[in-house]
Length: 161
Image 1 (spheres, helix red, strand yellow):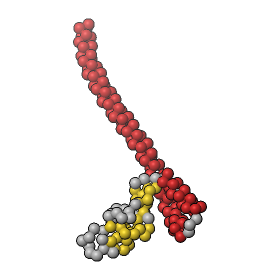
Image 2: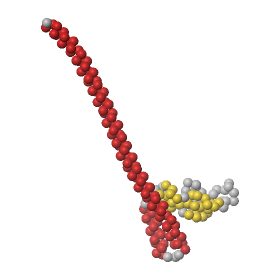
Image 3: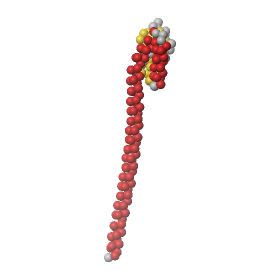
Image 4: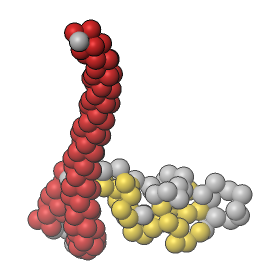
């Protein structure tokens, strides 16, 4: 009887070893799947944080752009008034206005005497003798502006040859 019991135990050992091995493989596979899920979750979270930061920056930039665009027309009017009047106080206000806008990344598009560039300018009148001539800005009707390097208002210009 002892022989039979030993043989039975030997037979039982082998299936248990296989079960232990298969359980170990399953656990390793499950561990690998969980590690992969964790890495994906971390990557998704990092992407979410990055997108949130980008959205906040884009919103702040857009809010600044809307404010700047709203202030450009009053600036134009102040500059027209300053050109008609010789008032040092008004000139000082216009200069301060321009400085404040510059601090927020606003810059005027310089174009008088420059070659016409459709990226920054819009032609309102063409005084060129023929179309083969190089178009040069002869007069600025309305100033153009960039905000942090992006055109927010094209300069309206008169070109000639």
